[in-house]
Length: 432
Image 1: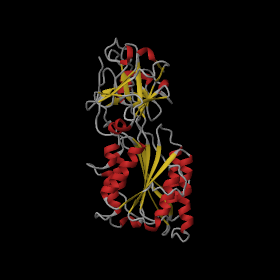
Image 2: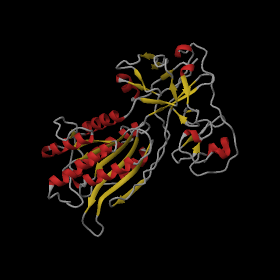
Image 3: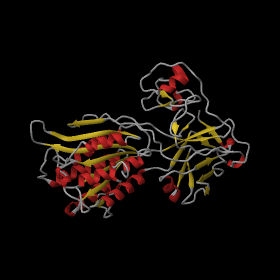
Image 4: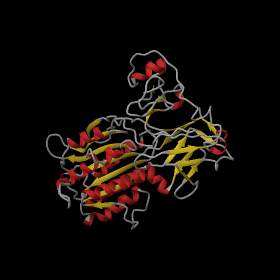
């Protein structure tokens, strides 16, 4: 018998850190986020644990020390460094939020590594991977959903006060699409994407000129509130040093160590200037700075997506170049890969299309499917069996990952769904 729990985003809230920062080459304090997973458990297998004494250790949930004593707070770089029932958290120490005597709030389920999850996949059936066999009493397969890391690079220049065609300023329209507590995309997707925010502008006058001037919120899961607070306290200011800002954020994202695809979504409303040329007296040079930054980011494994808020006009050829090189295409490719939007509905559609394109449907196993068993897996979604290697089914990636395809992939990106992944017990070698 298999136990199934709905696939849905975690609601655990984690506040990111706000960093207001100016100048070039200064490292941002992007904080790590809580990595969440999907778990495949044999029905007859319970999460094992051991109890220990407690005290309070920084970066560790209070439940951990009650359950596992001195094993909590041990420095780690991977799951292998932590005892059974605990996990390596984003502070790089062994931790557990739950266990045999500490349940999860809100109807969540405690996974095998002491994490409170609302997303669990159950599998590991008998012969042939079906649920009617003897079950895998001694097998425990964990799969981790690949979570993308997305930096939202938002133009904070003075022209963002200009109104959208649908009414309201570009600044408030963009902010509401992202941070509205009921309909905002960050609130909706915060458990599936590690969002980071960078509002960018430049101030070249007054006693304290700063360029680029960035207001940042650290990457993290469930960090809607931190992003919303930062956005709400900011207003359009002055210049548009897009090239320098893009290069700075790409550099930070390049050294960010969490797994998953990396992307920058640049939302701007006008011609770029630069810190050296705040009035864009040489527009070809200021444009080239942006193209070069997007090209360099792509070479570091970071894709750049462009949303132009307003009417692009003469800026269109430049936007096409940035979007092309940012996604690995020749700069002069005639294909339009940027979005031009002038109302809130179109802004939302553009962001959602980009973010969903970055999100992955790949599930990485903590074991390897053995030769002779690659075609013996069973994957069901909402009770419907998916066909292996079908355009709308699933495929095995290498010998340690399952990827949903086509319509199945799109489906699990929305709402709550039941997903089961099964392989025969003898067909999997677990990495302990």
